[in-house]
Length: 421
Image (cartoon, rainbow, N blue to C red):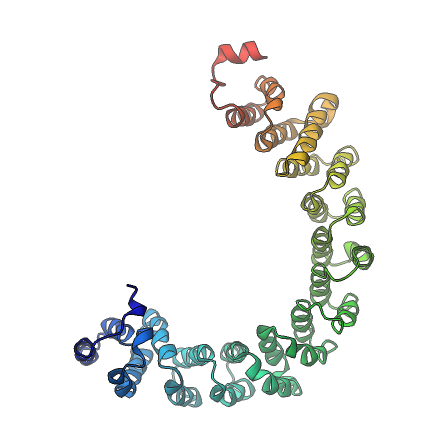
């Protein structure tokens, strides 16, 4: 039976308590930790003997929290969460002491978040509003977020103050229930970029009609971070008409910020369909930055239909960069759907046989690798011919592909290779 399902007996509790006290007196925090873990097993918490010694268990846990090393402090967190609300006054006392060890206060905040008790809300808010340590304030906002709906009212009030607005917004973002929509909508036009970006990111997870106007405004925000969050959010709006979303996102493919443009390509791939694929193709064959063209290639492959593969084939003869052609060949090898794998293989074979001028050695090498990944046995003949290629890398990739497609044959046998070719 699992330890958490075992109800400790009185004699066992007494033994563990005695051992715990010996470990305390010896400052053996590691052993003390183990005894406390055993004493606070899930189904033993309601045992009268355990209840009788709750204050002692808390006192021992606080000693580890004060004097233990990082790992011991991390482990004793479980004891505090098992003890529950009885630990809150002591943790609040630690937080209230701004002269206390920073790490000790950090753990106190972390534990309060895990306890998810409303008693912790005032001290966490006070910490955010008044403490000088930014990391501690940030952890307090996370803890408030873990409190969930219970903290929404307090956090909403904190949005009214400029010095706490960012942390309050971030805390609300952790909650992800519909109650946060209105408070976050109130800060989508805030002067602080971090506030706007965090609000838009969180609001994007709700397919709620109240959210859409904020997303549309954010598409044209002066800050790239906010625009990027809006672009990513629209990619998940399955409740909207696909062609409408494509129309909204298409201009963002040419955003002057490369991160926004790449995010638009990814969002279009999520939306899928022929209209989105066409926009990605036009981006690919344009004079876009190389990184963005590569993102367009990946996005077209993620759409994963016959039309998007045909556009990749067409692009192979439109673009001049061997690097981009190689990238197209690589993504074609990752096609998994059987009907599309056939089309992808035909495109690769077409390059190899009908347009040898397009297949420089790096591309031939990628073709060999991709044909092996597609796993179609009827490509063996083409791969066998590549065993006689002038490029060592091409030959090696062809050999690896053939071993994958027909492992029973001795492809490294020179006699066999000669006969095949």
